[in-house]
Length: 226
Ligand SMILES: *Cc1c(COP(=O)(O)O)cnc(C)c1O
Image (cartoon, protein in one colour):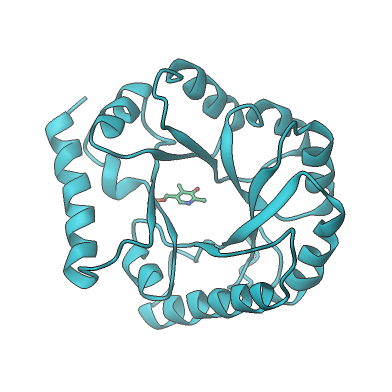
């Protein structure tokens, strides 16, 4: 593992953000570590990163057990989640970013021993390969989540298509922000919805400009490291 490369990558990400938003403090960097080992996570933690994202339930669980001595670590589940996999991640996750259907909410309700912070995943682009609710379905879905006492809707999440132009990225991130504000305006107790999880290695600067509070950055941090 090349920890100098890792430190350089991380510094570049922070510097790119500082260059545009010198005062930005209102965001959390989630290091997406789905392609790297525990060692890299441990090194990033020593460098001050505490939020980590994984997209395979079993791997998240294994890494969480291996790294349980890192007391401040927070795990984010960011991938498609099968209902039968909910029990695998629940003991470890601080956030689930991919709540997109009632059957999943039901399973979380059944298995959780404390409230789970969830992002509702929205397919803003409408691209068929992307999971998530359509913009039109989102409000009524969140309203229905009221009956699940174990679920707290902390925000909305989206993933932009890889081939999007800058304009398209701005447009979709703006749409998600508007939708989030609409949810906030309902004053639903179960859905404070203050957070926006958007932006990956290719588009985190645009996402921050449009109000992201959690950016999910993988490749830009882990490339060339192992
Ligand atoms: C892999 C992944 C990321 C990080 O992608 P990079 O392009 O490597 O930064 C972010 N969000 C989700 C949902 C992912 O699966």
